[in-house]
Image (cartoon, rainbow, N blue to C red; front, side):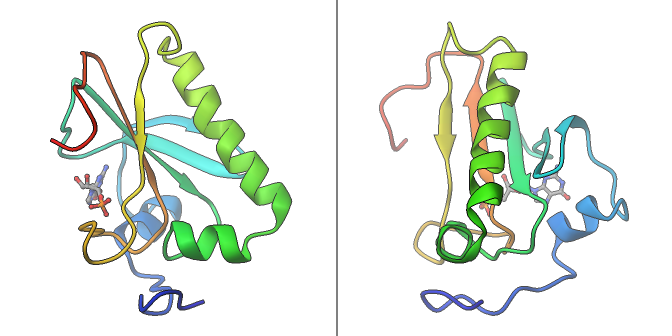
Length: 124
Ligand code: 5GP
């Protein structure tokens, strides 16, 4: 569903292809609702992407249109990934880019999970 000017979902985007197993990824978690894998160009010592299995262009699209079970399942997966990677105590940062001004490159909703060092204040 187009939201806030983004185009309709493109089933050939790289994350859709990763979900279908057409492109490789270094997976750290998979369940009914989500897939987590290492970012190909990490911007922190640990940089993992968590994506829903459903076809959503952005956070705006996901939160407006996904069934509640998918939304809950996705965010529980995000928390589980962080916990399983041992990040609750040192801490971590979650970030989602939405649209042009945020620099969203891949039009499949994803959450960046950054960790592995003190990350500073908000925007770099
Ligand atoms: P965005 O700018 O859309 O929020 O973030 C997209 C992220 O996807 C970037 O951090 C980029 O490095 C990552 N990325 C792009 N293509 C691939 C890929 O083929 N594999 C993996 N693992 N990450 C990718």
